[in-house]
Length: 295
Image 1: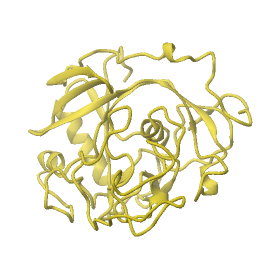
Image 2: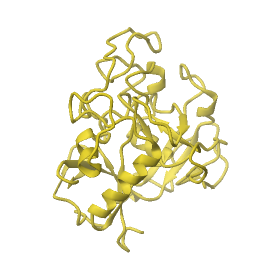
Image 3: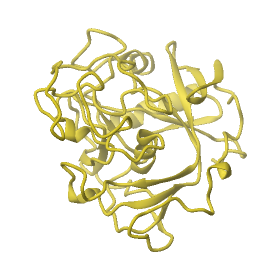
């Protein structure tokens, strides 16, 4: 569970005692599982072969951010506040895309997705429990790392990529920027295209940390359940992870089927961990299991 640090100010601001230069890189670079690596304008990356297909991961360094939405954000839900500072103390490698059908099939030997016209479409119709089985198999294939889902806090941190705005690119959205139901509008914006299906995982421009489609296409499962916000600073917060087969887990990001307001960086939803839907997928992380990285 989350650890409360101290009362938050009315307007959260980054802690001067934790400046950007205090952040750090991965415990080892490249990790032993990498088949390719480099450093580009988005930061450090590694390529990892997973049963044949290659998945690229981006290094998400530790840091602080303001989680939740401001009171004045259009279509804000009360569960998105109060805003509060979150400090993530450990970095992790995060897949730059949602898991594709090609990667899922290579690991599991099957493809449960509805939209199978392109193997680079995200896998969907997978439950949270299905994803846990997939991650266990990935971990068996890759030495020195653990495959996992990001927590809800880690997901929002990665989605925002240092930006306080509604979306990672600003406060407005069009169907040229994300895959959603373009028959609906957001914040007096214009209507657009409704594609009525998923699109390949590298469609549209990535955010400032090189992550594709954190907004739209498919909802993404998170590791934990939904914790209430209380306005206090948090360190590496995590919601509940136990519970029965119908226990709820957070999903983030919105999908091809949804209104644009549900694609906002702060928007929160949850589903039973056993649910399989045509608009729900995931992206996964890798974390070092070496002593330097922490098991």
